[in-house]
Length: 544
Image (tube, helix red, strand yellow):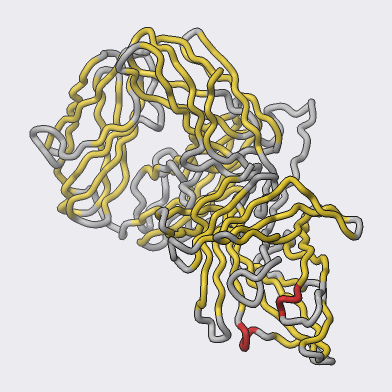
């Protein structure tokens, strides 16, 4: 691999391999369910709702003190979801998932909070986990005193979320957020019912002042049009408007389906993972379109068709693909249905598919860039077959490196004479392994001479971060956040005849950042004092 920014560039990646156990034909709903908790990408359960008042020294009521979370069920069966025990109490839920897909689960509280404050519970299901925060009020705290903002007129800044259609039951997506002015902290219970719809919420206020309360919707709208819903708390009343639509009618087509995003096994879908489908609307109105849940993920969208005729609808993806390969979805609208397919790829922090290419910005200079790309021509030596990467910097085109993969290990074949060796020194070595943070390994040792003096060198690799962190990069094209990122540290060592000696303090080190199924997104070169000397940041990529 040619030198790019410093004494050394060794493109590295780390692959996480998940093994899938084949479901046996005799599995029933009474065998353990499988799935994953839904979160916001930062470890917080999403969506989530904490219900009830939590008071220091007051035993929890399992039917009132609850936590609601969302699970993507990939296999029907029994479930047991629980939190850790903090401050004398915990939450748990048991039952049977009778269908796959996104579903809401209520965990009931047990125990007695020992002290006031905020407790951050970790909820676990299968191999997934997320965080929910619960606020415990001091002992003796009673009912809160507050007023509804906007009373006696329209509720101030009321935000109504979700789609409302006559005859269609509300779900966890149907909520309304209102503003209240708290004068005395304490517990609250707010509820209103109108035209078949109920909006309610309970909990506690831990600070005085203006704050927001989200009420969850339930029931089934009975009356179309603009429903002005009154709500009362204490002696104050305000109202908010819920527009209830009639259901849209029409047909759906998958013939020109456009799939957006990257779908990777064991990797949760993110914003932007979606499919665009064509719909011929014959009657305007509300729509709620979804696919079946296949291979651990699904697509859905809701809204309003305001006109008739041909138009495009976007269905957002959610869930986590459980296996690689082609996944076929069925989607319905009205009396019509169709199918489309999505290919789920293997986990790969260093893609090597032909025609894949990456463009990097050097040292934040828009006029200094490097393009790396994969060509169809392969290379073989020593019984191994390699993928050839090329590089182009301005008018100069050259070989970037030769890469291969063997199981969970990645290998690089290169000439490391750029260390300063007098003669070429080619070798094949593992530059990536599937290992935990803090794991270190060494490359093959290379022998040669520098100005006639015999030397022996090798590269030391360290996994320098927990798996799958998020990293935001800013280049001339803007700021983009990459998820599922690994950081690998590279250092050079020399052999003094007895021991291997680190050269980091004299020549520095390199940090390489790799995003799952994208490749290297950032390279930072540091000197011996730990000061950054140069960088190379991804501004565009195309992986096939």
